[in-house]
Amino acid sequence: MLVLEYYQIYLNLFYWIIGGNHMTTVKDKNNGLTYIQLGDYLVPNLVSEMKPVHGKYAEMRFWFLKEKKKITYTELLTTDKLNEHLQKIQDRASQRVELLVKQMAKEEQVTEELKMKDPMKWVQLMNNIKSRAEEVVVREIVYS
Image 1 (cartoon, rainbow, N blue to C red):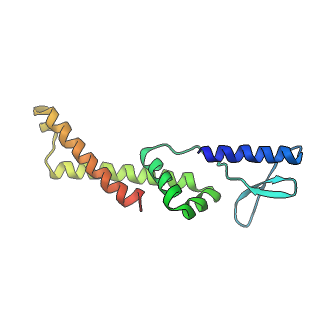
Image 2: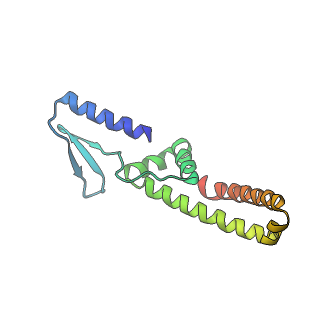
Image 3: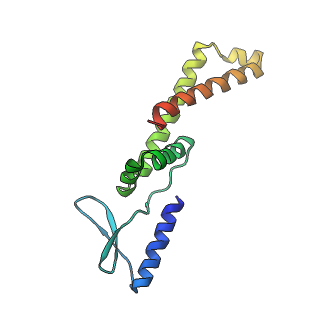
């Protein structure tokens, strides 16, 4: 989120240049966006008040939106729904991977019994299953 930090620095610098005493925040009732009033100008407040979402799938989705779906990224960012969207993607992807791993392990008969008999074989099979499940989820959820 380095871009947003630079944006905030830019706003502070601009405000200092025009010689303002304080910045005020204005919320537009029509579209729900917040603006920072700098002199006579209203500049959209693109700095989110929410905590950033952390997680493998959320990060992947963030970079996918930023690089490949720029219009969607900008829309989510300006309406302050980006973090909410990323959290939903993270939750859905994690749940889907967990479900797929359970189903694939059951189909391929990777059980606790195998874990007790041959732990290395069990780890090998589970890693393979998890990799395949993540590949499916990334294609279906993250990059769609």
